[in-house]
Image (cartoon, helix red, strand yellow):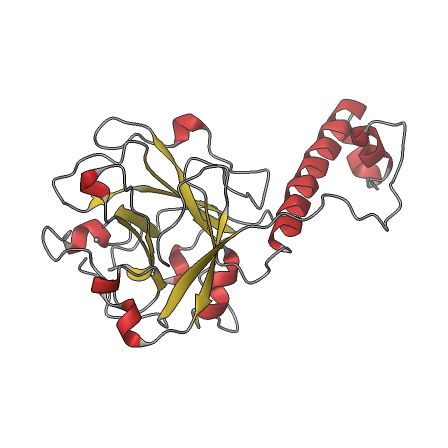
Length: 281
């Protein structure tokens, strides 16, 4: 990945591709998945405690890195964001982000390695919002009312729920369906995308639930706000060889937020913030 575009109006896709070993070395400033981290610098690496799982305490596994320089800032001319995860399936609770770590630049991690591949990028090409061959659906009734009309409620439930409660349930289900359908339509443009980059843009959520508010995103250690930079898509799981018959590490999407000021850290690796969202049950 030769470096991502920093225009927040542009979404860039990341794809997994095989690459010769030399392309993934630190000197090439790669974006990649799996293998060992390709450090920008071997100085001031974080200790094992900084990259251990908050739930089980075990060392986290290197998941991926994204080369994302800030050319207008001399101290960020070369900049990489790293993501680590716990490989203990028991730590993957619903919408719980504590089994992941994110940081700008990185260290003492698990000896377990995911398969190593390059992340290559290309801009998103939006397709027409509507299909000209599809007849438009029409209705004069509010969407929430339509949803209520189509809900089958058991007798015992109808005795306990009044009309307003039923409408609230229908509206919630309708909004959830709307968000998930939007997610599916956007990823259908490039079904193999494993990463979406849009620093200063907005994530593509898989659910209307567990969406962070601004106050949910902690400020950087320098005091500046953190902004969205990229998200890891569920398609990446297909490339990690982690599936089992019963359970597996899993996510709907992983949204990474970084310092809006790309602050001067004296060439040190610093923690950033990651938000995990799962598909709604």
